[in-house]
Amino acid sequence: LFHIVGVTPEAADLQTALGAAGSGEGVETLRLSPEHFASAWRTLDSGAPSSGGHDDGGNCGDGGGGGGDGGSGGGDCSGVDLVALGNPHLSFSEVESLAAMVGGGGGAKHRDVRVIATLSRFVLEQAEAAGHALTLSEFGVEFINDTCWCMLGDVVPFPPIQSARTLITNSGKYAHYAPGLVNRSGFKVRYSGLAGCVAAARTGRAPPRPLFLAALRGCASV
Image (cartoon, rainbow, N blue to C red; front, side):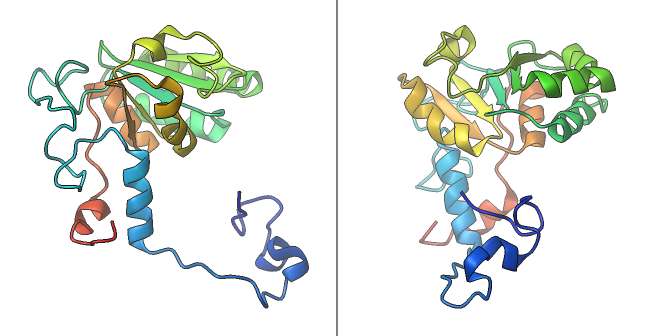
């Protein structure tokens, strides 16, 4: 766990975040480079097609081919049939952003993709009062209260995860844990931002990876 200065409530400034070491003396400093972020993204996006060790396109890791109608599943290594949002819970601001994305005239949800969001009852009540829940429901988003994806399909039987071939999530936590939790041959996990997940919901395909990954393809450490 970590504090983000000016974002985490207990870390209004650097001195507060450091606590007893407020002066900063003797505190270890780690500098994150673009290569660090690229490596982390590739690790979370474990179901991406591989191409010579760089997963920015290329061949499917299981030998499947592309093509088809752009939908989900089948032999298409970019196909997505489940969009998993939350984990543990969507905040109200995330619900607000998601509603703006799906209600912005970008197209309907793909018929073969399920979009499921976990959120607390309190946030769902807020979303209903603000009209966001209706917008999301009309797009095809399904809501699950008071649990998270790390419990679904493992502790709690959950057919959507048990039958999915490829899911995409914007949760780094779930992208990390899902392969081991599901532990099923052929199951893949893709990782993207919220906008990328919405794009996958509409097209049935994982979106392209961020441009900064392609720019770093020649880095040996990535």
